[in-house]
Figure 1 (cartoon, each protein chain N blue to C red):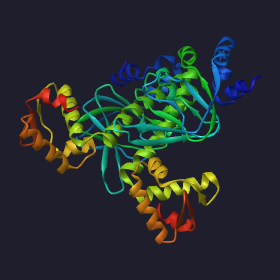
Figure 2 (figure 1 turned 30 degrees about the vertical axis):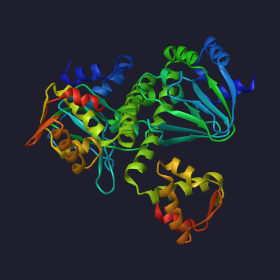
Figure 3 (figure 1 turned 90 degrees about the horizontal axis):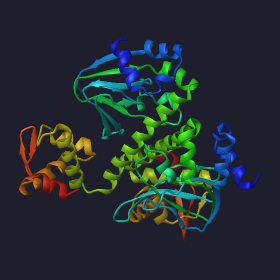
Figure 4 (figure 1 turned 120 degrees about the horizontal axis):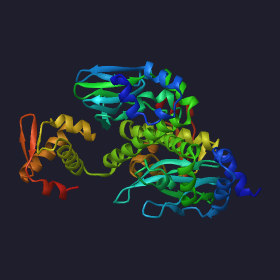
Length: 222
Length: 222
């Protein structure tokens, strides 16, 4: 079994329900792709990219307005599967997203043509795709609630705590601009909030990032 | 066959894939409910209501913030099926919504306990639920894009055109307040935009509603 086949069998839980010919179709149409940081791997104007399995690194899925504003919907990490990049396969998905590599990443792409063939034949494959889409629905609703209903300081606090949990460190190497993009706000707003956090001795701002020095105070804000 | 059974077999396309005992379970756990206009049929604090099939009338599905702000996600009309009111049945749905009757309505509710039993046994039923959820995902993404990216005048124009198409009339009996709630804006903003539309001879405002007098001009705004 090749590396790609192993990743596919592990991540696509419908794999065992496929017949031999369908298994071969998947294996023959899965490719490994190495992405440089910042690379745009999927955009709505493009062809339907296919299903993405992340092997390493980090991808960011976002919406883009006509005037270039971005809203991050969610991020993808090792072993995560993304089906929104194969929206042509699921007819109930009628919107499109953009996906960038946030770090140097390795991904497996299962070609949407092959996927389409299998999904239309196999209810387990279809169900898998829909389940993955529905999980993302929940994440997007969470983002939407944050943007619409929470004050920006709360959103920054939630972001910083998430980030600390993810990196297991209080030292966060992330620019104000990047935080603003993640939480769907403006850089100026984020800078203002972080300055306020600094005055309150919650964080210490340094070049290219910040350190959380009072997590308890941060937790109280959310 | 009773009226309820007929509605259930027509709307739930997985019905024919059920065995006799499962069919009986559905029929035994579907009830007809008459709702008065304004009645809240589902809210996130409540128990999991179940799957809703609209027989007549109109329901509105929305999010509610802690301070009482509402964002309409979508509306349900005759024969529409709503699964977000049965989110406990689909584990990938981790958010909750509110549902009100916008008019006097008749709905069928399939109890979530019975539904759960069937969904965990039958892949077609599971797939149906996920497909319906994913369709709503697409609608919600559209709403989100409108709120985040479009200017309010464009949102009002889109709403008025939708409403004209729906009612097949240029005379719309809808208050500014209601329009504001539908498009996720403030009443003052909507009133200002409608006044501007009136100055431009696009609409004529009257008590409790408005008339679209220049649809072409409205179409140009979207």
